[in-house]
Image (tube, rainbow, N blue to C red; front, side, top):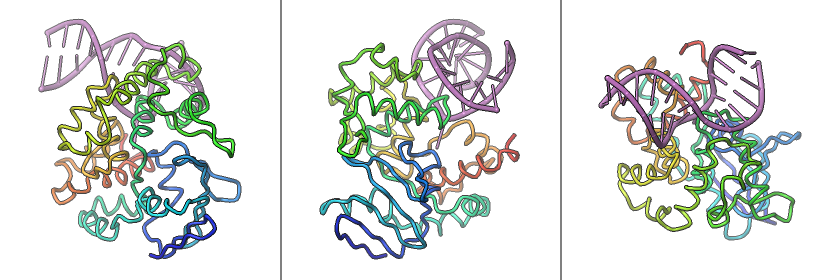
Amino acid sequence: MQTVLENCVLTVTGVSHFDAAASLFCGQAFRWELLPDGSFSGVVGSARRTLTQTGDTLTLFPVAENEADWFLHYFALNDDYDKMLCVLTRNPVLRRCIAAAPGIRVLHQDFFEVLLTFIISQNNNILRIRGIVSRLCEGFGEPLPDGGFAFPRPQRLAGLCAEDLAFLRAGWRADYLLDAARRVASGEVSEELLRGLSLADARALLQTIRGVGPKVADCVLLFGLDRAEAFPTDVWMRRAMKTLFPKGLPGYCARYAGVAQQFIFDYARRNPHLFT
DNA sequence: GACCAGGCGTCTT
DNA sequence: AAGACGCATGGT
C-alpha cells in the first residue's frame, strides 16, 4: 500500500479488503452518501470529503497536510485485514459470511458521534437514523464552508432540553441524547477515560448513560474506540448467532470479535430467509 | 390497521 | 435472573 498527498488529494494505491460502499453503508456510519458519479461524500472532522474508489486505488479530497495518517486510520487502512481475515476464515461458517460480504472494514469514527448515532439507532431503521442524524447536525453542528455541517459538540447539546430536540423527531431517544451529551460535556465520560479501562469497565461506564445498554455500549467500543474485541449484538445478530454458531464464536475469533460481528451481521441481513 | 425497525428502562415474577 | 411491556416515529 502506498500513499501520496498532493494538492489536498490523498491517493492510496494497493488497497485490498476494502469496499467503500460496503464499509460506508453497512450500518456503522450514517453520514456518507453516494453521489451520482459513483463517488462518496461525507463530513468527517471539520470538512466535507469526497471519496472515490477505482480498482485498488482510493482518493480522498480535501485532506490537509497533517490529516493523511489520520484518514488511513479512519478508513482502517492501517489495520492488518490480511491477518485478521486469515484468522477469521479458519472457521467455515465465518468464511461463508466473509465471502458473502467482502470488503467491509470497521471504520474508526469519532467517539461522540458514534455514541449519539447509536443511541439514535436503537429500535430504529437505517433510513430514519440517517434522517435524525442529518437534522441533528443541521440544527446544532457548526456550518462548514461547503454548506455542510460538522457533528455537534457535546457542549452545544448539553444545555438544551427535550423540546429543543423535538424537530429531530427522534422520539424518546431525545432524552437519551441529552444525557449522553451532558455526561460527556462534564467529563464524567470521556474518550480518554474509556480508553484506559478494561473492556468490562468501559462497558459499565458507558452503560451509566441513560439509553445506553449492552448493544449501544459495544457499538461505541467497536466503532468509536477501536475495540475490535467488543461484540455488539442485536436482533439480527442473536438470530444469526443462534443459527450459525449455536455453541458461540470459536475462541480464536474472540480477538477480532467486533470485526467478525460486522461480517456475520451483514450476512444475516443479506440472507434473511436463513434466519426466520 | 397491524407490524416492524441493529434497545432500553421499568415493572413483574 | 429473566420476561413482558411501553416508549415515538415512520415505513411497509
